Length: 240
Image (cartoon, rainbow, N blue to C red; front, side, top):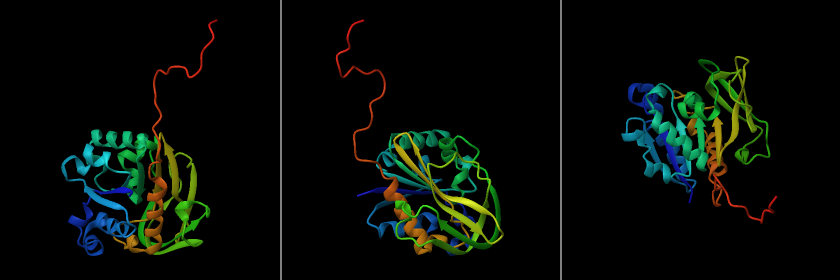
């Protein structure tokens, strides 16, 4: 069974009654609920827990980590970020959602600013599937339409994705690379744009399907990890 940890800074839900009304159990709670229905083993972690809920024990027992953050990126301790980065390099999958593009861990793995344009007016978003054969798009039609979302616009300062799965169009005219995959070391990373805290995006069945697909895609490959460092020869080396 795939072991998933859903991480959320959980600040909006505690401070903003509107967000609390949309996600009464927190964004992490809403995501964990639908993932459990997919038969994943799911736990949650939040910013204000000891070690941000990401102890060595938790990370070592996580196959895929889902990350949502927004207002408190700088409060995430650097040593925890480094532990997450090393786990990804060792094979743990990472699914970064919405404003997690500005998280320390995503920026560290990407090596760029990960900056973008944004506008929070609650406009229509249409996410076009531009890679219909990709497993993350399985079970989704030609596009996903969200009635109200925050706009993210290009240029998105990320490395060129290994694969581009979704491109968004917004009512105001902007476009955005909304579903991007990467390989980092032995691990896989998927960035998925939708999910502003004041809109019920994570209750949308297609959005839920994409996140569940991303978990299955990002889970570690079952094999022995490569051995690094000085290596003995497999064949006899002739003396010169």
